[in-house]
Image 1 (cartoon, rainbow, N blue to C red):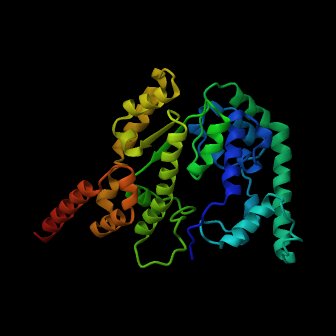
Image 2 (cartoon, helix red, strand yellow):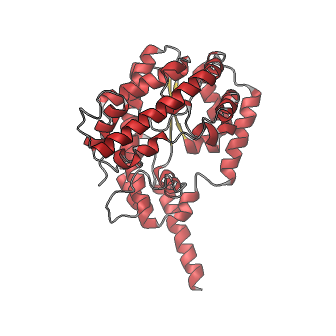
Image 3 (cartoon, one colour):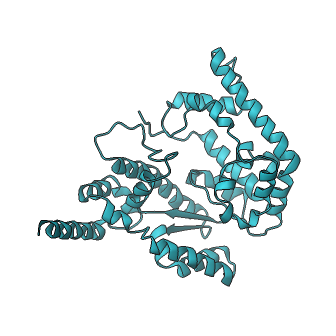
Length: 332
């Protein structure tokens, strides 16, 4: 059964340290998984500033690292597959804080972790010998450095804001109903990843939205506290606002950075926003969710809407009218 796991302080600090090393270009301290992650391949077209790094990984056959597959059955491959105690044990084993012997693993499981570490060490040697300097130069040669993080929590930002006076944080949130629909329809490798193991009578989309709201409301509260502690260094944005009015939102971002907005950047961002508008990414959920699902999500996510000073009522009314119209047409 899925557990709403509280992220322990050691992991919060580890995320902060990881982002610190990434933003400062200290690539020798980055995890091997970061340096050879499959996302370098999946999102190559979106990482134009790192255009030389991925070809290096390709050339030296470093883009198909599947070391985690050795331990996936033991540590889990989806959110909530394993109990909290197992997750903590795996973290300590992967970080070399404990050995397979002190962990009391049986021979088969111990071999799984030995194969994982051997795999990681092999990739580390090769990426260090051939490509890390390319990534380091890419980072340090740019005065403005940005990274998108999906699973980091806002409480990981406090150590970073203290350590990096020039750091600015953009907290991007999205309507939980749209998030849930996106997750449910995701690639099979991650479809319903957050709630796949929840036993509930509710629909999967309601479970996904509820889980999202549980975490995002915690992040919003942390962000509000951080805004008081670090005024002028954090910007909250809604995905829907970015798609609806991209130019104003991008100007807000560059105002936060105290930098002029490059015309080429604005043009590229407007192009991407138009693509989102054409796909109806902000409103598609209105025609795909049932009225009951939308209402239930609004109830489960009441704190989210309150903290964001939003009301779900207008869109719910639209759904009600839309569904009613469809039913009338179908009966005629």
